[in-house]
Length: 233
Ligand code: IDP
Ligand code: MG
Image (cartoon, rainbow, N blue to C red; front, side):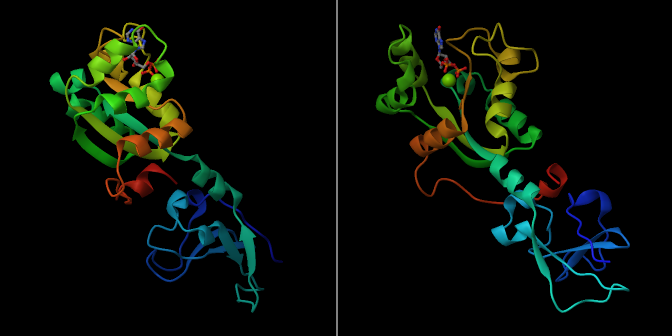
């Protein structure tokens, strides 16, 4: 009997040949067999594969014999994984740079497992600071905020990952460092709202907007970290 198995890859993987071979198979039960189209060595990296990886072909016969036809099956959970990959703009503010916290702050995002796609030390011009914080233009602290952000170099970063926008905000902590939980960057490393060491985008849309604002074409890298198979299934 022919049956269909839509699986998340890891629990029931058995491969009739090595991952680097042309075809890898997933078997869940004797009567149920899914053949994944091979892409590259790490075929389970759903979020980073070309679209045709979202389909599996079934093949089954009485004794595992192959039939001439293969059915193409859509794997919706792989689409969900792709949709969750976001980008966020993280910036170490001038106080973070002056206080020697650059390595400490970068390492928190690295250790969490996000992917760094852009990084530079940069002296921010006033116009850019005003554009970045344009939503706060009417606030009384706006002029002081612009002076603060332009008072010395900042470290501009683009990070990518599943749910990275909200997760980065959690890692950063509340705007007022005295309200930020211990364990967060602001909770551990800062005491005042006006010197809260780091910025993080507040929505996926703003993540894209801010990355486009702070980085020029050619300054971002698209790459696949070697640790990816150990971070996402
Ligand atoms: P966020 O950085 O946590 O997203 P926002 O409300 O977007 O917080 O404010 C942007 C930045 O403006 C803050 O990180 C902080 O540097 C500054 N800021 C916000 N509120 C105040 C304030 O009441 N006094 C001084 N600076 C402020
Ligand atoms: Mg904000």
